[in-house]
Structure formats: C-alpha cells, structure tokens
Image 1 (cartoon, rainbow, N blue to C red):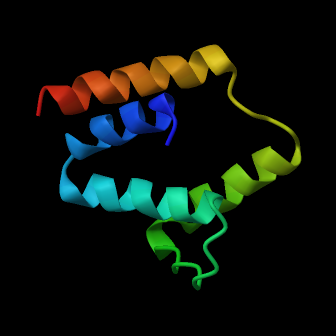
Image 2 (image 1 turned 90 degrees about the vertical axis):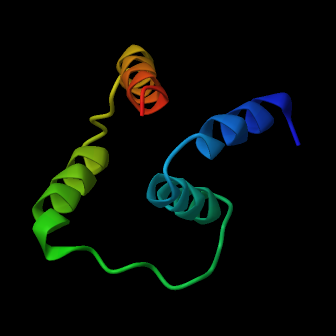
Length: 80
C-alpha cells in the first residue's frame, strides 16, 4: 500500500460510517469491482444526469477547485 493511500484511509477512518461507506463504494468502483451498480435516488437523478452531460462535454473542475473543496470537506468533518 502506498503512503498516499494509507494517509487517505486514515482520514476516512475519522468520518462518520455513512461517509466511509460512500468512499468505500467509490474506491471499489474505481478498482474495477464488478458488483451491480446502485440505484440512483430519484431526488438526485437530475443532478446525476447534468454531471454526466458536463463530463461528456469535458467540463471538469480544475485541480485547484478540487483541492479547495477537499480541504473544506476535511476541515468540516474534522470539527464533527
């Protein structure tokens, strides 16, 4: 295991269980887990479809924007 992955897992351990499960599902998906996809909550369907359309158009957040969002997320969860 790389040091970066180990650091990420240590950060995830500090999160609430439901957040840990979300991250675990994302990791398994990225690692090629062949389990059946999860159903999309109908309340989130429009956002998911818009996100897919943005990805298809190549509209992605900059590295700086992702880093800023991640930093905000970590600081918010650390205060919980």
